[in-house]
Length: 168
Image (cartoon, rainbow, N blue to C red):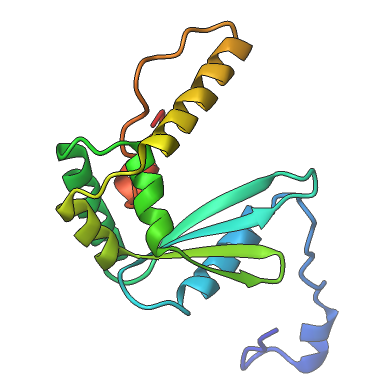
């Protein structure tokens, strides 16, 4: 509460207090937590912050430290141009992920310079992992009465332009 020069303490105390009304929307709290976590990591890092939900599911928020947005988008452009796919994306990110926890919140920190180096070097995911992903896609399609497309999905992304693309 702030008191102006013309307002007395008594008048200020007579004002109704600010009401905080629960909304059930946890996104503003998650955003604030993600922002506080982001400040703890070195520049050029992509963070996957996983929040547990009461129903047993999770919500993932992505965040980037200083320089991470531009570098992540650059990596995505190079990966797509090189024909890297989702398995390559998972594999390369797993190689460099540093996992930590804040209570029940999981933080996957991905330093982007090593990811860039692997993309430039043409590192590919193992064929065994590619076959497993194909099997998961085929099972999901069959469960929905659909026919799976051949191959695996394209590179998913480490930068916000690709990761936040609708329908990606």
